[in-house]
Length: 495
Ligand SMILES: [Zn+2]
Image (tube, rainbow, N blue to C red):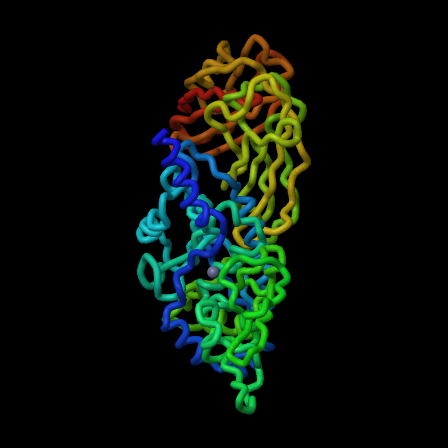
């Protein structure tokens, strides 16, 4: 009985926190307000026609479970970055990925008990000269995300602060752009007004009101912008707002907050834009070496756009009898691509493999695929600067057996013979196995250091075949023979 009571009390006291998915960004520091007040918006806006695009590098940090699974795939995060690039297009600010994604496989980090858990990680894991973004489950903390203003947060100088995103908010189209706004000096439009409607930002934009009315104070109050309407709503609201009797400022004017503003707390579906002054402030922050200027220290790498879809090579189309825990996937490299998303689907829905790779093949470890199942699979090609609307391969199909081997060597080709293992100069290599005929083999020759020397796809016409190695230099080599996911490796000595 006592236990039950405690549970109810916790539930009741916990519920107000859980009721909102708000932004956990700290109050705007005074030095940011001072910076915004110092900006000459007329001058900054006049320059806009000659603005060049600022390219901001992003380092992604993904928290995953202790067994390496995450609520979203990297590709989902790429699509959120694409949405953000749309939102920042008019500002001439665009984002790209720098380096490989960093993963942290820890339940304690994936489901942090407090934001301080992630902040401690930021202090050591933040990379220099990039915008660091961390992804974790912040729902239990009542947060969609939070970010640090320039010159605040964990880390130092060129690796200070960053964004923390809740996986649940990544795809809502608004939170990532909102938190990035804070990171680039933008306050909430309700800052300084939600807690004091009379002394906060006034609704009027007339700087020459006649007493008893008070003139506009938008450049000195609220978020310090005059093209964001006065706002006092610091709780999440919808896309329309009708002021009630007391929702007035010092002049008695009704507040009519703008739900289209990304920095507001309006509904995610309607928060889509930055204003001219907000864009100018973001750019001024990026031009200021004491703020986020370091993000522009290195130019964006020039990478060829990814325009062609990958062609799948392994498993062979329609292959059957694959071993669920030892299957190799391979595809041809795509011009310009540096990253590939591999997905294996069953029944068109269930995804048993969804992984981002920096190579054109994948040999998965244990039990990713299920036994006796028909699979489809596909590969999407990306690079760090081309993340939107990327080409995906045609879907391949294959099926698995019930057999589960504990090692590749055990799985197949037990009777495979490779001879001679001491090759004389110009001598051909022989491969033989009882059921070799008709098998489609990938044969690779590697140096002792593992460097690929030659690779060939061969369909065996008989149960034995000769291979011309073309080896010129004496030494130790490794021959790898792969068939539908099984691989056998043999050592050779070239005299
Ligand atoms: Zn916020």
